[in-house]
Amino acid sequence: MSVLVTGGAGYIGSHMVLELLEAGEKVVVLDNLSTGRRASVPASVELIVGDMGDEALVKQILATHDIEAIIHFAAKIVVPESVSDPLGYYLNNTSMARSLLACAVEQGVKHFIFSSTAAVYGEPEVNPVTEDESLKPVSPYGRSKLMVEWMLADTAKATDLRYVVLRYFNVAGADPKGRTGQSTPNATHLIKVAVQAALGMRPGMEAFGVDYPTPDGSCLRDYIQVSDLARAHMDALRYLRAGGESLTANCGYARGYSVLEVIEAVKRVSGVDFPVKISGRRPGDPAAIVAANARAKEVLGWTPIHDDLEETVRQALAWEKKLLAEQA
Image (cartoon, rainbow, N blue to C red; front, side, top):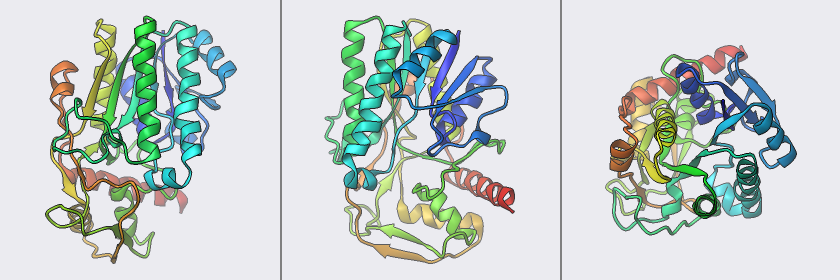
């Protein structure tokens, strides 16, 4: 029996592959390498280059490798881009996920773990936001993910598939052992952008909006370290294998940092005072969103161990230096 990781050559997916290997699991990766990279997949893992929407390919993988569980990461994730290209996001994130899910049901896959997002909440009325908060996504990205959540819920009612939906907050950092990290060119993750500015890879950076109703006017977010997030997926897999019912859970630390606080943390850790341009708000950005995480802790047994912003920044800085050394 094997686990299929879609998007396993990407940022979060590659950390998941490492977590599975350390647990002794057999792993197969499906990735079209549009943002992932071959080097992020260990040599012991079979990497199949292709699209999750290719039903013939997916059915062949599920049958040939005796896939028992799918952990689905492959998606477009840039909120402003989703506003300008909504149909591209509905195709990639929703339509192709529907194809993947149909193949899973047809081939008898029992367990499905889905990479969802805090963007399904939109502008929450209360923070930290619980999983029972009303869902009002304000971007095509958030809506494209919510549609997959609906498909999973409906499919689970009609079949014996069981699932865990994990709603991520802001993912950051890198593998503490330096094996993988955020490697996507032109990535928009705040900490990666700030680290690149600190290393002189960018002339500086922008902070989008300082007129939000937050303590310092900049957006407030819950930053979850990527290895902690991968372990939450491992906990979800164990939960499903133990007979757990379908579940939706937030993944975050239940506290937030503002954009300006994160930038100051990067400056402090790197020792570089890089330029920061204050720009207007971006479309689709809520003012503040912080995770309530009791469900993940109590039901899945998840225990975060990297809840330290400066540690996360140091990991991101070390990974970016490693990427620079590879290019030298």
